[in-house]
Length: 129
Image 1 (cartoon, rainbow, N blue to C red):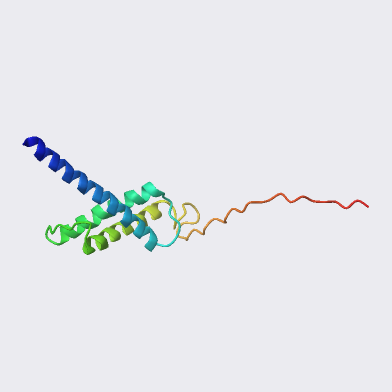
Image 2 (image 1 turned 180 degrees about the horizontal axis):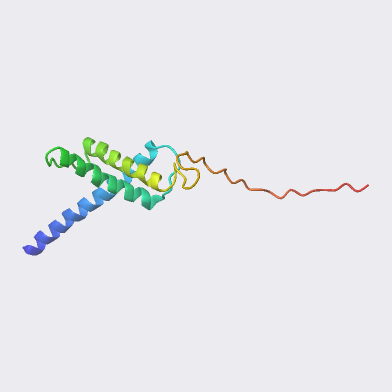
């Protein structure tokens, strides 16, 4: 009997973890879509920001609303999780040097580096008369 109870608890726990991971990925992609510009992170950073934003957003919501539990799969959960991921993405860009540059240019917005263009070797022909 205890084996059945343990396996049910494990299945419930695994389901919760997979829901948070899947929802975190969705929320991370949504936050990156809302905030314009290039991002310094890849797929793993998006996943981590989404999961962290989901946990932080839902946790702050439950703290301010007298411990009301909010699941990530609800309209309120989607809004607060996206807001949490948006805040994490903002600080990730801020600390990654997206907006500010250290040194003499403190306080100024950094311009995008010029795009690298491939230089093709063009043959030069000399006309011999």
